[in-house]
Image 1 (tube, rainbow, N blue to C red):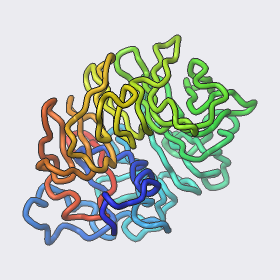
Image 2 (image 1 turned 30 degrees about the horizontal axis):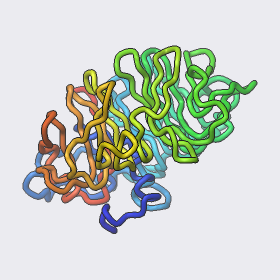
Image 3 (image 1 turned 90 degrees about the horizontal axis):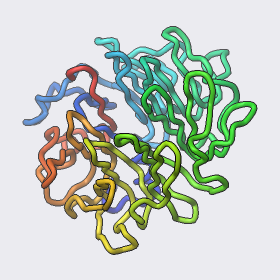
Image 4 (image 1 turned 135 degrees about the horizontal axis):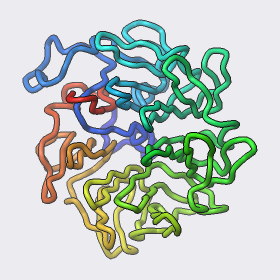
Length: 353
């Protein structure tokens, strides 16, 4: 596999879509840890071999999203087998093995989210068994059902984000539902109907990839097709575009306390006045850098009041998973990339694991 520093941007963007939340449960599509190297003893071998596998397009397409659903680990992606058993793209861990959720979904699951104890999925699927499900679905506990009527007019690159009692759908679409609701790149599901979110970017082509809330402010990240507005904010009434004047795409957002952390293909803010290296902190007023030793960010998330980042770094003790203490990087899980290589794809916290 090529080094991350030489991987083309298009592939790195696909890697970034894993939403790698560097926490504590690793999903492996490879050998067990019966012969673990020093440092690997912290990892559980419960998932065993062959783990989760996908149909094509290399290791990065197998696991796309993981989530804690009421204490149960749920995994979505391009999944064809779990422990040798055929599955349809979404599974749960029952404590001993992965098992299908009902009939599964007939296409890749790109995103999972839980709102009020309800599990949602989005992706390139159209049905579950004989039930038509256009790209967004809800799990009832026994079957997958549709979320409202109709579907997004563009189902590529869909993301789900829990926002309080509501579900946010992000992507490239301009409308969602039937009859269609105009909701460019971001739509809100309140449990009954789809709606737009404050009239975001009407008529502007682009994609949103991430969202996070800091207090009363909702932030969204992505990029317009003309290269503009990679970070925007919504105060409940008005959208503010091009927050921080970044020079490239935002791919990940994480709220930690009163700060927003962001990662993506950018190198400066404030129209070039502030040098950045794919990672930045926004305090509500200004951007600041988090050292210059990050070469590729595959994912980020908050856990226990800490910012965790997974990717390729230059000069920190990770070597590939670290948490930020406000001044520098600290070691995350030992030997994550070095031991498992391409088999490590994503993390999530489930209970105390």
